Image 1 (tube, rainbow, N blue to C red):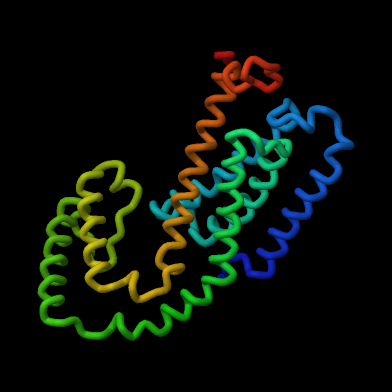
Image 2 (cartoon, rainbow, N blue to C red; image 1 turned 90 degrees about the horizontal axis):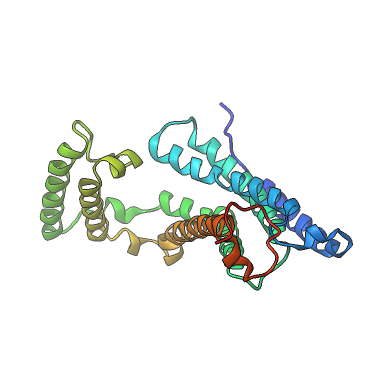
Length: 257
């Protein structure tokens, strides 16, 4: 079967096209009607809605990856890359170029997410491939003390796993969304044991700092963006008076609190 994947060249073209669209838009923005200069105006509001919907595909990718539901995670990853890029363009246009208010921080987070994702895919992926192909230390014997610690850890994991997911294989088990939702306490305890196991094996120390922490930074930025986006939607919809600071409320809203 053909891989539903996006190559480095196609990714570069996609990001370059997005940059060209934004540069062109802001270069000729002064020629457009007033609505195109007001962040969240009736015209730009639609761009924000469409951009938000596209960015939410990334959430679907995470759910698919962590639940196994919805088809190939690789296909959803490719969709996540394309829709996140298009969504970033639309929400940037939605801002009208105003960078003097708090929502501008969302654009900063989004920019770093795009840069980090492209860098990880184009540059860091080569280092990760080399690491997986040459990690001889992963197969080196542990000291007797570490072997005893590892044996106790595995016993603890197996005991906990028998309550968390009866019948699951400790060697290949990874907590999914359903475990965090239905058994959060047990799942957190199991995740802590996995962390202790990785530390005992020196997993992070065996790779570069970039490989060890880029994904964590990407996740933190993504959560920060999602929370900020939800906060922005709630405030402009229900607290339009506060957002306007007593000025004109020209965007769609429900209340003027």
